[in-house]
Length: 462
Image 1 (cartoon, rainbow, N blue to C red):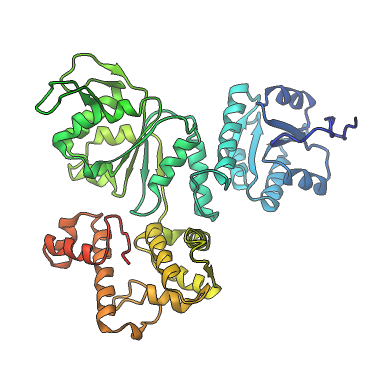
Image 2 (image 1 turned 120 degrees about the vertical axis):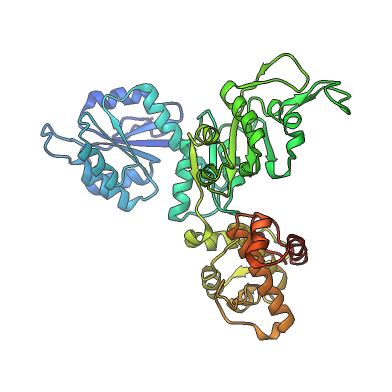
């Protein structure tokens, strides 16, 4: 049996996660070894030259860097190490630590690349909680999970970091983002990282009439009203022990908002017609494509409910701010059509996709890739193919050249469909506002949505 210079058995397989610790105090190192949760192994880095430190960092999932590596508290040698490791290993989670909680030092640590700053001495619970969030982020970046966030760009990394920080957190979570940005995917990821053996119940509030809200959410007892011929549990009871995802929370009428708020504050459910209340340990994850703060000012949303929901808040960026993810997303969507249609993406096609403004966000890109997979004549999707699916609009909604071979009727139809999409987007999917915006009746708007295969939420039709 052999041991390496770090004092562990080199004949055994390495733990799944390794933590690089750079600290000049042997007692701190020994203490951290005893505090590490299962699955983590400590890799000391103090005293290594730069090349060895960089080599060790590349095999680690996180690094804990002391800001003062000498007795001179005027010097913060750890800042240079943070900067170096962040440069060579951008995805490495860097944690700064110090007994000196000078605000300027902590802020310089964040600017140097640290994502967290811990005060020494570090307690067991604090260390474990920190590493738990990092482990959640590593799992989110994995491609082996059933639900994935596609894209590794800067904005996507920020989203994944925020989702990982929500692991194990109780209380309501509010997800905001334009239609088609992936709010349900984010909700599923939040749920998934806390265990998939827990219930996950989804409800679109825009499809729940106010007259049945109480019965649907809280359930009812037999004989509570005409047609209630048996006891029925509500959605909250069905989600007990897990997560209840409320999509389009902005569609909830004010009266129903008061009932939801009462549940969030008490955690108790009483079925319609019943006498007894029961505790329902449910985490509510709400999603909206509107700015609820503006709805509060317009007296359309309760301020107290907004404050209750947004204690934990996640904002998803639109696709136009995630252009570095378009290649990953497009290739993933094209792959969904395999093996029936084996299509790859040419560089000029990626450039054409990146030039589009994507008012329908990721949902629109998915629909576009479905069309590209169907209509592209070659195994390689070209820029010309993209332009046929995304022709330039007269008003400049998207870019590229008009494909005149499509004919006037088809070009006009596509232009009209784009106007309808833009109107729905500008009105936050409010059909009355959208129809008024472009000067047509509500019924005409719905007919055009049906004709062009446009869904609420910016979906692109075929």
